[in-house]
Image (spheres, each protein chain N blue to C red):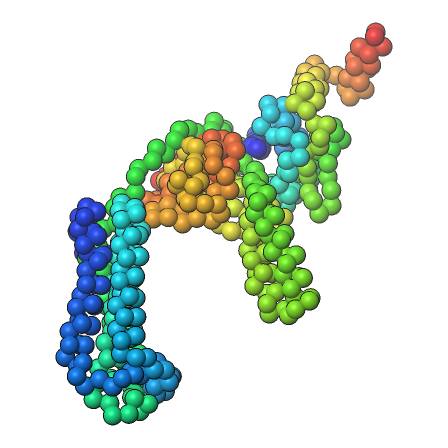
Length: 330
Length: 119
């Protein structure tokens, strides 16, 4: 699967749009074909919604069902087409196309089965859809998704960004050094505080289950509002400032580091926002735009963290990576 | 900020840690209000004893450069200016030079007191 994906060259944006629209055209054609074949034998209204057991419990007029289905297919197709057109070279595009294939196949299959089950029915309330159709629909969805991912080809290569200045810290062989700094985001702290207050208020005044969601949001955002970044003989570590000695979010050991540098990072242009961000080929913890450490990992990925004095941290990381490598080599 | 320790140096490790912080305040890398890593964490980071780190932090506290608060750790004080940190560095150099000449602690204090008496 992986090698097949690699051998397909990246497509230009035009065939990509055609490939993305393909499943919706196929589904509309199939749906229209099935309708043409069974239209004379359909009851009106149709059984269009089914209980867990497979018995019909919702009914729609033939006219309404046809218009609704067609509108849904066109809408889904338009959304996928729009997403692909929006940024044709984004690394996420193949997955958007795969999602489009899966969605088209899943909904198309369900609607076609509905039509076929209604054909020749004397009594609509007796129309049944067998349970295994659900499993089959799931299978069709997954298969279509996989097909879409294959047809979409390899992800467009993410634009190579300069890794920034790479340097080393002058450190005598017997000496050890550690670099540590905190980064914080007041918007995130305010958001966390508001969520916590709202969660407690809702919990006390209304009910705790409703408050739990808000409290969960607070528990996720508050620790990220202030983070300690440490570079030392163990690698690069991110941990919440308040509990930095006891727990950590992320540690990249020296063995996984190829090289570190520092450069200016634009959080919106590169990561689309703040926080712990994952993009194709790269991930990072960004709380602001500006100076940051850029670590190239041995698996080819990149990890980024925005922090002041990043050049010193990167230089120390390189010195320790060299040390670890010479230890392994000798 | 960067902490450096060299076990091969004649300067005690705790003082080396204090010197790192003093240097960072002196060259403006660290500003007032910056929180230093917890002693336990820094000790693990550098591979030294926690008490060594605490000795270094204690010195900085006596120099008025940091505040040690229970639960909040070590925070660089508002009065810790680069100039103030450089003064600490100058004192360190004075002591090192005097020791090199073989002066006792009492004699070093006398040198300073004599200098002050002249004003």
